[in-house]
Image (cartoon, rainbow, N blue to C red; front, side):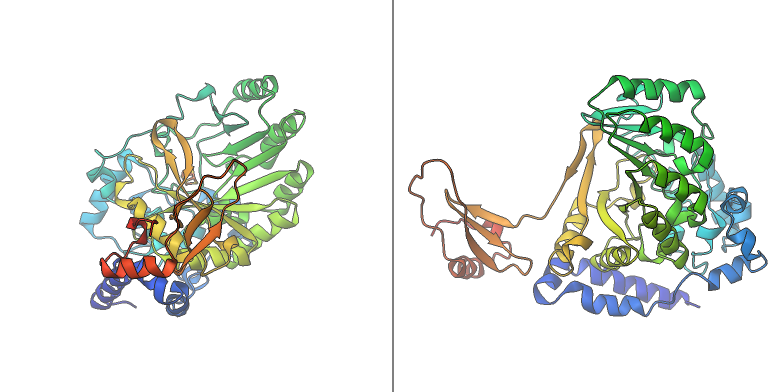
Amino acid sequence: MKTPSTMKNQSARGAEKYFGGIAAEAEEEPPGKAALLALEEEPPSTGAQRRHFFGHIPDNLWNDWKWHFRHRITTVDELARYIPLTAEEQYRLKLVTVKYPLAITPYYLSLIDPADPRDPIRQQAVPSFNEIALAGIGTEDPLEERRDSVVPGLVHRYPDRVLMVLTDICPMLCRHCTRKREWRNGGWVRTTAQVEAMLDYIRKHKTVRDVIISGGDPLTLSTQHLESVISRLRQIEHVEIIRIGSRFPVVLPQRIDSELCAMLSKYGPIWLNTHFNHYRELTPEAAAACDRLVRSGVPVNNQSVLLRGINDSVEIQTKLCQGLLKIKVRPYYLFQCDEVEGTEHLRTPVETGLKIIEGMRGYTSGLAVPTFVIDLPQGGGKVPVQPNYILGQTDDELLVRNYRSHLYRCHNPRTRAKTKPAPVAEPVKVAVAAKKEGIRDANRLSLRS
Ligand code: SF4
């Protein structure tokens, strides 16, 4: 059990570790190594918590996703039975849930350490008073999805792909959700006529080769209902791939059952994008769910969201991404948290994401390094944001730094006629000049000698 003082010390150490400068760590030793050893000492979170909270639930119910769905925790009074909350906290959380409701599956609740208010699983699921205290920051629909809706439920923003939203129901209401504006009037499923209108649009637009069915979480629909949509999509010749966006493998992995997998395997290529944010979500149940999908011919990618105090360090992201690869899930995107009203307390500076990518690149395999992306406001779309490794260039040479900030010159072939380039400074000269001028960031140095 953590005492308040040890918790405070741990938090202070965490802050020092992070704000002490990831870039500085990166130059001296692989950031993953020492930190990962420390992280490995943390106790596993499943099992014990399940026994603590739900020891009376037999395995046949625990393994039934519909039981979890029916028994979601949706009120503050219920939540207080599992997690210690003072009367003042309960009062404040009730105010929050008027605007932003609450829903947590028993499975996901069982991953929470009830003694730790800063627990990264808890912060994704349990409301925070900051959701309404900072509500003046951000907007309800920063990505302007409503503007790009061509028919109700269908967003067509990019030339070759569309987003189909079949329902706004999710097994869990994630506190950082981009679509939390939908929660208040929630609980809808698109009607047969609405689905037909979406399919009709796709049939008529032959440039659409990729259909993303996303959330609300489409796997809340019955397998039969889902099949009726997927099978009709499959009949459209120009639809090459179908993607499903679902957080079920993370918050209710029991949903990935043999019936669902058998159905999906009939209509490939189907890809599934899921949303693990922390390595503690990589439980045996989640691993088994992903394994079932992969064995059914459904590749699984992960799109995590960078969240303050939850996964905003090199160490946590490295451990998450390495863990994902172990369960055959590819780390695909790391999203800058969108400018959504009610999420400001979870948003990080963009520099945090850049430092994380910089601290991972080179220190672990490229397969484990996601693309850091900002989904631009006003519907500008996704833009990858990467650390800068090219420090300068002439007509036929590049000056590039590697992950350890060592400098290298690379010949850069040109097809056009050469003009005589100015000589590039020797890397050693750049380094010496940087030192002389007291400049740590070699980007600020001129390439010319
Ligand atoms: S599963 Fe996705 S859509 Fe649903 S609440 Fe969580 S982040 Fe939002």
